[in-house]
Length: 261
Ligand code: HEC
Ligand code: HEC
Picture: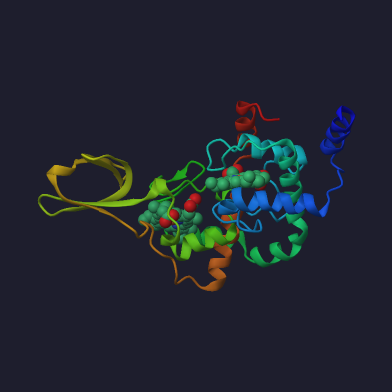
């Protein structure tokens, strides 16, 4: 019994571990119930990045992928998970198996010119609400690493139909004051008695609920929908946003902090 366990340990840590169909099916089931919510049903991406491009920012060995799953990615929505050893191995194997269709996916997603895309970004005033590196505003989410953190499909949807999925940290709220003034911003804090928001000029404003006429929770995004860009413009813009993967060294710093190798 003991010997068998040791043998299994050795076989399971080796990169060349032979997966059976059953292992992959188990990995897929684990993926569907724990990961699909952010990475898509078959890893095509969604709120989280696509995992089927054969390209992993945080490293593509079994060990790298395992570390990301166990440690999460600090400062992002990628959580940490605790799985049984075998379940984890099957999951990693499944994640790696997703890259099979790589070329097809890549060709479809990245048919644009990032340099033109950057101009389109500038011309459309995106930086009045977003920051890339040290430039721009922090009214909306920081886009410095958007290409690493979200799938292209998600980013496309965020641009043409921003209300389709609004991150909780960026929910909009409008306060109608006693004298009828409308103040709209990103909701920073709210309790029974008060609400705090950040307006588009980056000012924090705090209101006592019994001193205002109404507090409206917006279901629409605070970002305008850019749905009249020409298809090629949109494609170029997406190609540009896809190149935004942050500073790889900064990523290494985060890893070091977490003790992830
Ligand atoms: C709540 C959303 C969420 C869930 C659930 C989630 N992830 Fe993630 N995941 C992310 C985000 C966001 C990132 C990108 C982190 C970054 O910005 O570097 C990520 C990154 C990753 C990466 C690294 C990708 C790369 O390019 O290196 C892997 C691998 C990964 N996730 C696997 C998983 C697996 C496996 C599960 C399920 C056990 C899972 N994730 C569940 C949001 C999620
Ligand atoms: C008036 C401010 C404003 C402008 C202008 C604006 N955005 Fe946004 N953007 C936001 C806010 C607020 C959010 C978060 C709410 C949401 O997802 O709809 C957001 C979300 C996004 C997201 C999703 C980020 C994530 O991690 O979920 C992307 C991508 C994005 N914007 C790109 C752009 C691009 C590209 C432009 C220019 C073509 C642009 N935005 C112009 C305010 C703005």
